[in-house]
Image 1 (cartoon, rainbow, N blue to C red):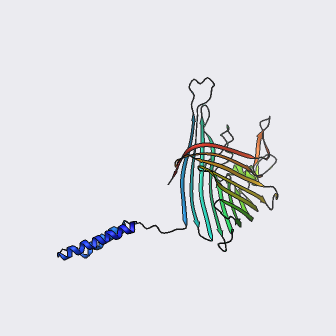
Image 2: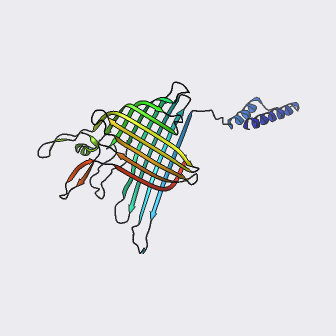
Length: 332
């Protein structure tokens, strides 16, 4: 449509110029060039591209207030902020998906300190290449970095952090093969060679052997002879599956599961990271979400306090987090 409009405008200008020329009143050549340049500058031509991008921020809020409420209760307010940035490349043979995501949530309840409810920063990059357009198998390489923004505590004790930024921090780097006829909706990835690094850059946590690093060596009196290691490296097998489905018009479902086992230290002991999400889209700006996140990592040991007040390190246990919220999302 804009090309037709431009052609008619240009033709009209030329006819008008010819009419003025017949009357010995012609525009100078520089003026005509400037006029055409201004018209062409207003036309924006969208070139085809294989890149797609997503920029999204979201905020979930919930609040409860009581005044002379017979059944009792505590005033509270909760908030969860989220940021997602994606840059994806796709052509007939190559797929390259890049994602930066972050979430941070807090809860403030009357009579107690502000507590963290969610905290994660994650960067992923997946590259896949297939030899022809018929095959659904891709030679693939995957990178993932994950950590958190601020200190974590074993509430109500906030004197000693049990985690913080890069304590732990995780890096996965692997090569393998990925299958997906419609890879954006369902993909299955298998890597026989995945390197996993666990970073614990806080020396106090490292000395305690947190998150699977080698703890400090101490003498009989508890004095440190050798500091604990800050990095724990593993090499193993990674299996990953991601399913995205549209259940109903405004209901989207995502299922992501990662299974990892290390060759050297505890082969056959599988670390599990399984996440389910249901997104209920009310309109372009309002979204309700129901999520479940289950994790098991053999390197993360649970500590408990005995009757004498001593911290005792127990074995690894299943971790589970459930979320339900409604909030505002904005694409930019």
